[in-house]
Length: 292
Image (cartoon, rainbow, N blue to C red; front, side, top):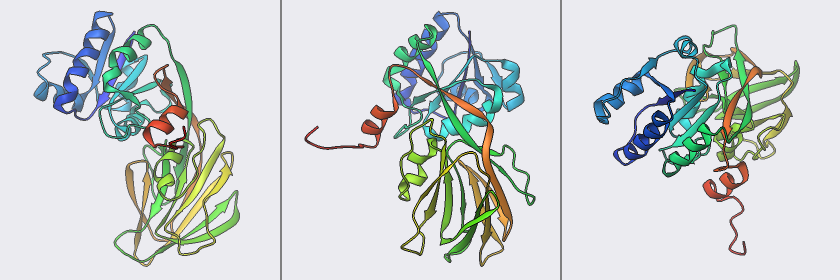
């Protein structure tokens, strides 16, 4: 078995947990490869005195041919790791050393139990839908998002106007600070903070959520994920911002973006340590009621 590890940096109080994870995997004869930048961090800050094979791109990640990817960090780290995984089908398990840890929801104190579940293959795959984006104005690479695709204003406090079409038919023009198209995975992120609904993973839907709309009748809108969505953005400035998860692109005024369901999915590893309902209750305090 071979495990890839992706991270950015870890705090001193997380170091011991990482060492336990390494000892557990190495003791079972598991091969380990590490993202090149994270490997430099480990060498400079953790004094683990370890030598790993490394990868620094999607292509070199594929050559390592891992069976599983472990992310060490928070949700942003897990989202970034998908740019290495892409369509390889390598499943991802997130160890949370960050803050909330909604996607990377295995607590660092549970790393030994997580490693045990990996070694015994005591887990299932939670397949997550992604969005893909295309535009004649800009070639995105990579062009997908696990959480959401967002258009927003740039260098101005004025609203932008986002004209939206679904399968070529006009839906609405949103006067707002921006617009979010979220997957079920992303429905608990930026979309939620803007008033969007929580969508159960596995649901075949996307959510269109306006950001601070200047219209009391405009509300989040759930659509099927088998349609093509087009955003055309008008702004007083020459440019606006398009983001795919945390990756930001600058777009020209009035340029169009076509969005659809990506042709592949990301597989998240789900062990007995976590499930969606318990994560909602524990991380977002969903349904908190003293009577419960």
